[in-house]
Amino acid sequence: MRQDRYRRQILVKEFGKKGQKLLETKHAIVIGSGGLGSNSANLLVRMGIGRIDFIDYDTVDKTNLHRTSVFSEQDIGKSKALILQKKLQLVNKNVQVRGINKKITLKNIEPLIQHADVIIDGTDSIPLRFLINEVAIHHNIPWVYAGVYETVGMVMAILPKKTPCFQCVIQDFLDLRNQETPVLGSLPAIVAAIQCNEAIKILIGRIPSGFIIYDVWNQCFDIMEIKRNPLCPTCGYKKKIHEKNG
Ligand SMILES: [Zn+2]
Image (cartoon, rainbow, N blue to C red; front, side, top):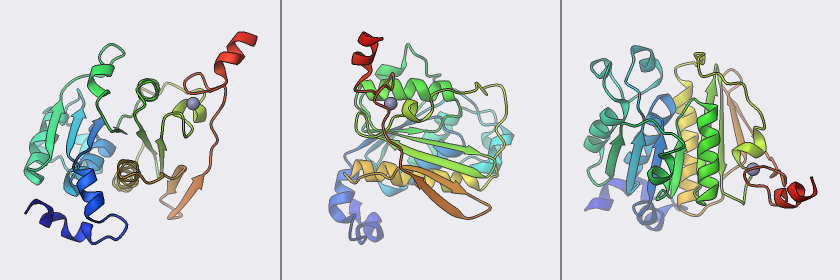
């Protein structure tokens, strides 16, 4: 029996058979399959999401191995997305898994993500997060941002036009694409688990938390309640009036 493998999860009162059945109908898309994306994908496949796509054009590098739990030394040089598909399909044959070895761009993002029930941010690129934010808001798809830096992790679930979007929170950014982000190896697994929990909450109809910050040295979580920016260029409900008056 398919659901028997989730028996211990179904015993969770506020999840139950109903939550499990609902999860099995849902489609998640993971953009970026590094430390965050691969760990989030691993959890979602084990928990029984219906369908999941991983999009990444990068290959596994030896410097990825300290912060991922899915890749191993023999995967070095191979496509992250395709390796993830192969390994996670072996974990749970009931889940439709698909690795897409592509670079996401302004031109191809819409057909790749428009059927998702939730998008999981596994990128390390702020410009790409702005693109995901814009397209997700436009197509009314919830997405879950996650980021790690040194020993601090951040997670924020975005429900289009209901909660603050990425641009409401981050108005400007430094482009750090050519810099390597410092990160403690254990941090992405924790942050990906929080990210996965936020995605599960969205998928079964619970309300996600605010902007979550986790700190390794203090072992503490902070949740910041952030308000939507009415003038936000992406989701602001007053932006048209503002633009007219401006
Ligand atoms: Zn916004």
